[in-house]
Image (cartoon, rainbow, N blue to C red; front, side):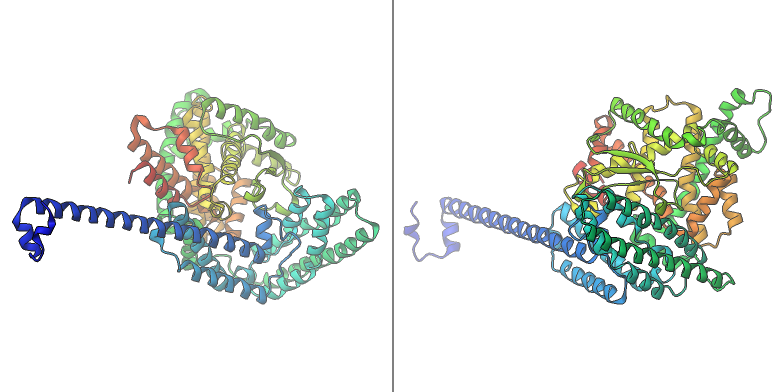
Length: 610
């Protein structure tokens, strides 16, 4: 039927007139609806594309501006464009930093979060957290006023000297420009420090004395190897003399200050509940509060004690066949651990034993097919540089994402400065079994492997703003995962020592919160560490010192581990027989060093689980 026969007839009359007319209208409406829906989808897609493209541009501009205002931070990310700049931490620079932060937060508000894809939306929250954290550190935490150890130029100079990102001559010229600012840097440090703690003052003295080796030994030695002219060498030596004088003056000032505040006028190293909760929120980026994490750790400590008692009962006849099992079950655990701990390497062979174990771990991971590794990225085991000593006995320095093929350094502190008694105590702590777990944690498949994966992440934001709880949590998770997979052939002695080691992680959180918030004394802390966590005195003394020098960082191990392990178990339950451990690990590591809650959210969406 032709529509022309109904000219002048109302639409309702037309619709009622015949079924043909109804069919025509329905088809027309359907086409119009489909067309509108398609146009809406295209508009949405265009808006999303536009927002994501703009956000990529914003990130690039943000990062470039960040490196210019924080050239030292850039160096550790492997970005060397501003390697010749040493920032003097004065009021002017602090205001420039605040201006940059406020401008960044204002720019973030211009983006529609609903239009950003997963990668960009997670980057959005990471940048936002980083900027808000920076404001809090500047305006509220104000550690530059009470932590003299926060002023130390040596590590950046050491990095430039030891990383071959350009010729030695060019690196020495960059060093020459940085040297010019060292006197002003340390003079500003003295002006900034108003209420130092005794503990941080002592650490600053130790580390800055260690820093002198970079300037009176390492750089002069490199100068002799260089092709610089004699005039250039002379000019650098002149600047070196001024730098050494500035560092010595800072150390002398600190030593005088330490004597003056020893009368009780020093600031308390404890930061208290309010600052602790805020620092935890920004640094850890967890689904839990600091108090909730502490409570979880207290419960985990109880469960570990139960497990260790069970293992000790099973091993007791093997090692103490002529002795009855003690009524005090924790005393029995401690006695067995002490008995086993005599099996350890000698002090002179400690660093070499670490080197020996690395290829063994590598072979096991490959055989068990646990995750992908890139062995083209070098891992170098070395003695810890002096300017980094004083806090941890083992650590990893990983290259930044811009220089991802550079060496990763596994720093192992030799026992040269220990007395025979201290060395024996330390070696009993890092005995035959625990040294293996330490190497799993620091190297394979712990920090070294995770950070190599992080440098391959498509998100530079997730790589440069590495989340400590994810980084440390992965290293702790890797320990348990290795033993669960069969490393060590389920040897009960290894599981007992692992439980002791894992107890350290749990107790780190309990100790840190108790010291910084609850006012735990040193006597109480050593009792917790030695009698409840079965640590040797040297290790316990070192951990107590660390708890007085840092805040929150010690909680990152347990918090990150707990969140990663709980998430893995939820994925295993959801996937059932389709769960692939290697695929899970590779997927998890592909997000760089992003906070665990962000990784969980992105992976849950992919796996379609809650």
